Image (tube, one colour):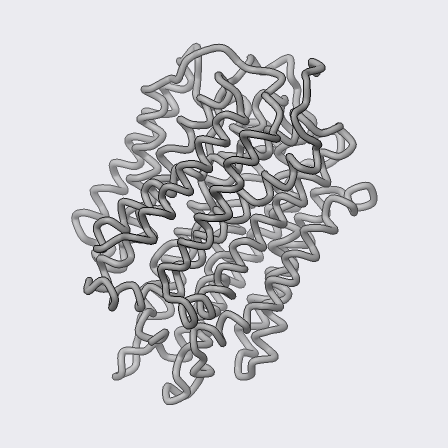
Length: 493
């Protein structure tokens, strides 16, 4: 690595990255529990208000690959500042939004900040000693997981005491200060990859991601057999095939497909797809279950705040497991940690299937989910980072996040369809619906655990760099649960 002047310490760099990634993750989950409140205050419909989540998801999928590529060319730290500034601007627009249309537009701007994830992993690999990369990646992954969980916990108290607009005012202040700190303290990228953005690849990648995620997220509202859903899914297949052909032929690809075929990369991505499908469904539907009124014959009739507090064991588990993951790698490989995390997830889903009558049962299951998330986030990121050349860190970790997002959207849609298939006369889901949904997630979790066993370990995870040409693409998307959780909005009133 080239010895370049440093404007700040590695500790300060880490704090900046942690603040940026943590608050982006928090902005994903802060909104979900309070959609009914936003719907009421902005006088809109349940279907329209879910676009507050859809816009965020689609925006990140579109902008992150392009900003990541720009980061490779002009410097990761500069692009990080731009991403954080966009996130802060989006928070400002959302905080003052007079209508649902402006709020949705603000969420589009916020989605630009999704580039903080792959950029952060790339900066860590550039700036930290090799011996500390694993623990730093694991710690940032823990912050990402905890940020998402903290959003669910804090949403209720913030809205109850200050109003929903403070869900944006508070992040605005922190993210704005983080952007200034990133400009001041994060060192310039020591290595930059000259080139240009492959606009055809960027357009095709954005196109098939949107064409896939949009119908998956809105399928429950539009109807799974509707022309819009079928047409968009067909378009997604066509655009994905065109993207693969374009990338294979490109002299300057956005994502080098040879990298994606590395055994450790594609197997870890398979785990991400399956793990995301189970993990984010539990993450999304557990608070909804807690808010079901007791008159339905189950549930706890919890408020948004009480449901968030019930998620505290999950939050503690995430934080503890994520912090320990990097320190444990000298004794337990990333593959072993990933398999263990997946096993925790299987146990949690199975427990929820048969035992969800009391708060302590749900709390224990949530704690197991948190342990699984903490280990899985850290180990997947470390497996990818250890398996690809340094120039491809952002591209590889970003695609892993994108695939996890796709899995989360699909899993949430499937779970929502099962849970709401046979509602009560009141319109609320039956307890049998939740039981069947948790059973489905148990099966998906088990598939993820089996896929984790197929991830190469030891020597096999190291990249064969001589087979890979230089790549300068960074892509990624935030980990966001599909807004199909909005289908249970009546339970949160």
